[in-house]
Image 1 (cartoon, rainbow, N blue to C red):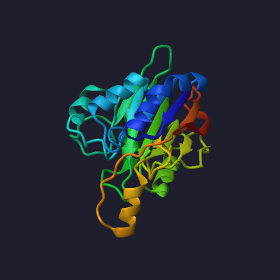
Image 2: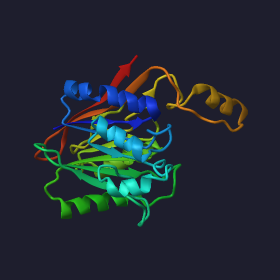
Image 3: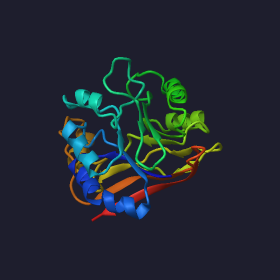
Image 4: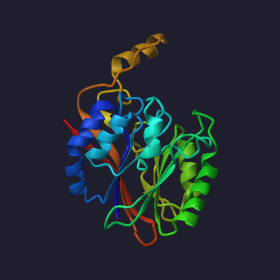
Amino acid sequence: MRILFLGDIVGRPGRHAVKKHLADIRAAEGADLVLANGENASGGLGLSAEGAKELFNAGLDGMTSGNHIWKFKDMPSYMQREERLIRPANYPPGTPGRGLAVLRLPGKPPVAMLNLMGRTYMQPLDCPFRAADALLAQLDAEHPDVRIRILDFHAEATSEKISLGWHLDGRISAVLGTHTHVQTNDARLLHHGTAYLTDLGMCGPLDSCLGMSVAPILRKFLTAAPERFEVAGGPVALCGAILDIDETTGQATHIRAWRFNIA
């Protein structure tokens, strides 16, 4: 099975690029399933219910999120209803939504989509390592037929990301990092069949600082004074990873960092 996982979609430029090009990309790459992190798709920070619907209508099969998912007031109730959109599972009990979804597409093997958030330089959530163990135990108990398991680890520190990759090696199909918006060059198969990439990158404006207009961010660095950030314009790149997964074992057989430039 071939899966395309897109990095953080940033604002209207990222959403519109996905809408315009996803069908052609899916056909060209032979992707059976397309996932994405959508937490910055509305205004560059957060995700509205309308933005989520737009992306699902564009052809995404599932979406993960992260620390900005709660910005829009309509999101908690929408997430309760929409099972294809998940949030980090290590939020405290009682948080709206879920951290795990099993996607069952006609004619395709089922795929578990998981989401966790790191704690280093981020919110002090529950331990993502122990939360990952609990998610896999839940899958084994409730969905033993689901062998393909893809995790979005939304985290800041590269050391925390690669450590979780080694912790889960052989027990999950892929550990893919999001949050930093910069695609890394370390796509590889770990020793026991888990595909790993520290960060998928972003789907957003190229001439930017992580998707946002350059000038206000430069002024903030130069003066330390508050600035209003806005999503940048100009050329867009879609970044992510292509995964090939053995449908019987759930082990990854190939991973490559993926990029699609749009003038």
